Image (cartoon, rainbow, N blue to C red):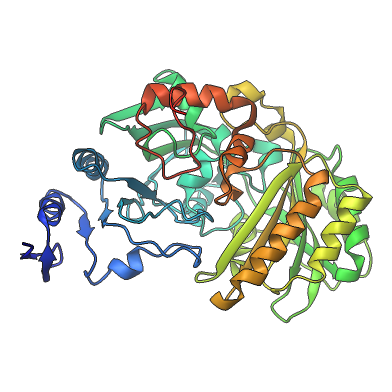
Length: 467
């Protein structure tokens, strides 16, 4: 029969033999272990997407790499699935799983900078705003995403599209090395000189090969930027979207652009022509001037600003505790009919919180040869995404149905390719579309480093010998 045991927080509740084993694990950690019933368990199991409601068997709050290794070894010994949480921004909720050992890296926030060599080392609990603030103290930055609360770990492992991709590439292109706990609990280093094949897979292969406990990045001089949105009425959306694409064709690497359809906090639906010029702001004025002349603006926030201000500008549109359902794909550009469909659906979206965008990928990010990293979506293109959000759980059905219908209507205008960091729970075909031409090589690499598919709570690439 179950017995009463002391929990990791000093409380008592009924336990099984496995619970007793959990207690032993908890005592071996520099961090801590939470079990169902512990005070912080309910909060700790929650993730960014409020649609996700899963209950792990235990939550290991890692304080160091050794804790992660112990967690992996424990899970293998006790035949437990593992989920890994960094910033918990996976829209599919991959950072938590029912009945799993959740290895929570969010407390691992160490950052070490070497401005002389222009390198930064950061632990996997760091969020992009935290790393940006540290590097900007030295006038440096590494390419990250566009919402400052995003975790660097999942972002980098999936590619990492951000405002300076044209000038400096993707997050994964700027990875120098990584420390990783493998499926057998060993600590490995991956770089261009050590475990080179694994290093290739970490740069875009998502969380398929282990738990990264340290990321080392190249840094680049990045000072104040000329950035932000110019908002136009939704009625101007068709011409604004067309113009943003035309103005972006052949633009300098220093400029990256985005066309966004959203609703302002005051309830006004708008189209935004957004830009970031990361060269000298004075030189950029002439480059961005046409973005101010696409009609009669509702407001103009395209101005010189600190880089960290641009990086956090979208934060307010992605608060915690919202329900999310996303659809996404790459496109070489939208013509007249694709734009018409986009504007039509966004003009009748069921939730005012929903956002759709075209995010430019070009320049340095586009010129990397496809075989060089696991991230396969190179060449000039746009990341198209429908980010459907709502606050009331009772509105799920109508929002999900609308998003699916919208995406199906857009499909003829999109490539069979998707940014893995935008991917929901969409099945194997869409995972293959995320990894594209590199899928088979990733499957072979998976067979080498994780032959039992131990790390499968992700956008999963099974080992090549597993059906």
